[in-house]
Length: 146
Image 1: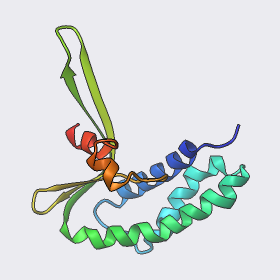
Image 2 (image 1 turned 45 degrees about the vertical axis):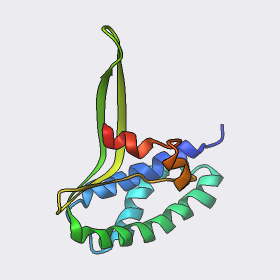
Image 3 (image 1 turned 90 degrees about the vertical axis):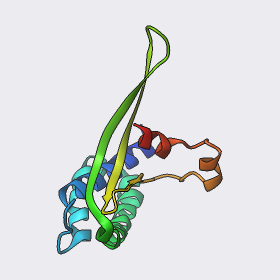
């Protein structure tokens, strides 16, 4: 059975999540190297497959070079960083039924001014601005609500 986009996404998200949790307060001296080392563990089960070795791992290495640089620039205004945070809210439908909305945020930043930023890492095609405005891609809105 071929590897799926979900396999790739899980490996990337898990590595980014661990990196963010491990280095929530400060970045290591070699952030790209540290992220690559974490990524090696998550990609190890996939490396038997040629598409993982030829396409996915090189893509992750490019992410590892870029990711910490962007996060380093953001850190000045951030009081706290959390990763892979799960939340849920219960919405009563009637006397006997409840709808449970659950979400997992890739990264939540609490800024020094008391505001928050919710970041969602996309390994596929991100929604367009129009799709978000029209409510066709409500993921971040729902994550913020939960």
